[in-house]
View 1 (cartoon, rainbow, N blue to C red):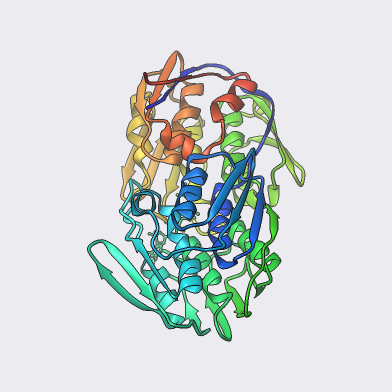
View 2: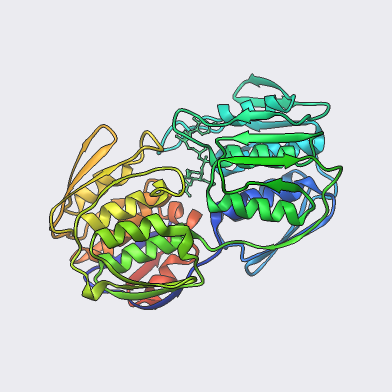
Length: 421
Ligand code: EPZ
């Protein structure tokens, strides 16, 4: 397993370009199962999770070809059972459920195991499929979903923690070919849902309201192939913005959409981070910013995203005072705290709230990556800390950040990937 060796105490300087959004491309790749015609997806980030999804689609019989940041997918002939080893390993693969059920009349996926950030149930996904007339059978860790035909319905998809992003994606995809109209109440409003709806519409689907809590899908007889460019990854953009502020550097982040991270920009402003905001770029002037404290609670879009919670916590270790971060989306998303403590941070946890006492000098040490965004928080901490920080198990990082070591090196960071022999 590869590691990253980071030389701390260096400010990031320069410009960086954001890649396509992991959390948009995964459901969009799954959506290509809804047509027998070929599709071309551009700006697909070159990530482990994207390759994984490609492998899953191939195991279902689709032809998948990667070329740079494009991927062509032709699901001419597919079968309902995929490679469960792959499906079980990646939560994002749950979004093949809706398309396969719609195309094949039955689908079987491994019940996603929990992961370090929480139990990750799929009860709302199954509620959506049942609302369209599917029967559900759970046995031996698999869930089998069957429906001779799917019929549109109105369904409330909100759970105890609020909307479900991939649950909304699954139901939206399954409804595109169902008979009649489907109305999703309490749908997720994330930009990735809007991007998926845009791709499905390009395929011939009839969808209105994507991006709002009520999405209406009118079933059509068939979908055709389409081309699509994926939106920029808002969480990668946020990660670089926070890294610039934390290292007191001046970084311009390009080819992003500032409208997708308004909550993050608002919080960074509250922390006195100086920024120039344009439509598709963000200049963070960390050199002019003395970081202040924040009090933030993660929420569904357009609130502060849970996927940028760990990174913000690292920044708050440098703030001049006490900050409070409350995690409302996942029940166990503080895996990064124990590792930040090893670097000298002063953080205490009370339930789902972390209290961060700022102004601490971090000093480098070996740390362990646990999940994707916790790993990003440790990279930022390593760049702030004095001395060297060795981050182990960075395959977590490679799942969601394209060439992050190269991008940080371009910005003046001293980040070396150590390949385990
Ligand atoms: C998506 O996961 C993202 N992943 C996650 O990003 C992101 O953190 C999450 O949305 C929330 O924004 C992808 O898009 C591939 P949810 P998803 O269903 O859809 C509960 C990253 O770091 N819930 O919106 O799986 C669930 O337990 C990853 O890029 C149910 O109770 O998340 C959680 O508490 C991590 N029942 C809350 O809802 C269900 O059936 C939100 O989960 C489904 C979810």
